[in-house]
Length: 86
Image (cartoon, rainbow, N blue to C red; front, side, top):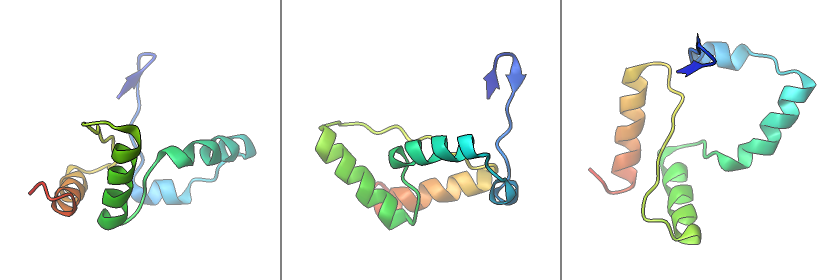
């Protein structure tokens, strides 16, 4: 991903776990977490169906932060299975 001419690389899982947020970053994180669904394929599927029903949408776009393609593919396969798309 590029922003202001600089390439941004998503952190690895280990890097993300070890990151220490400043007080301001933590406040921002808490305020936006309600917009994210994080959890098992079943929980994610349930929340996506709930949001789709509440908002009357017919399409959902998923943005992920997997650092490795293998993990991304596996995550999508698990979610597709849970949603009945595979």
